[in-house]
Image (tube, rainbow, N blue to C red):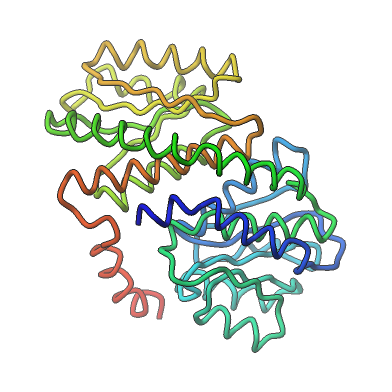
Length: 330
């Protein structure tokens, strides 16, 4: 798995090679991205990027239920790395009954078959990866689609710059990942609750990082995001049940308000027996920062699994759910 993460720059390069190949036509006023797990986070990242760069509104749906407001003015993108995610398949069939003409992104599977059967635009991503490790392939493929279709969120030039950035910083991200894994492995033995703490607009990165530690490291992780944290979660720390906290702070050092918010959070954490590691994001653009943070979290979560004697690729509980899902959804 480590090699999959260390080749993220390669995934971006491959997506750049196909930049401009796929496009849609239409007068769209919104984008709806439907996907689950590691595929669903693509929608979260698109929403973040589009919000900050004044692009077309993007909404993320992580459910088997497609929004009822979807119509011919909605660009619907269904993302599933495997192409066999049952919730996304069910959502696609609902979308097909609307006036929308959805786009499918996958490495194959049932979604590919449905796309070909219904004459939908199908964008393939490289096979042979774990879904959670294929983030760059899925994200940049969609960024390329939007740019080529006149709904630019990230330009090709910005994407190429982020590729060069990943090439230059992957080794450093790997070293930081090892450092975080070693720190967490030591502290977890004391029964501390792991927490990902960050500030707006980095909510999606915090969720992505939590998911990586859930899936790869097999641990429960809480997410705290300021300033919303100050209006609810903060009170939960007054009489906490866990035996202290293991807090990974993710901070954009160029965001002065964000830094001050997390500095305040840190004061609260330290008053309740917290061990703290601050990850300062590298990069000039928001795309570079979230890709760097995602890469560090992915690597750290795999290294932590190894230190715990676990197979990061194995997801027993998810497989149990997938076996029962057909009977659940009917």
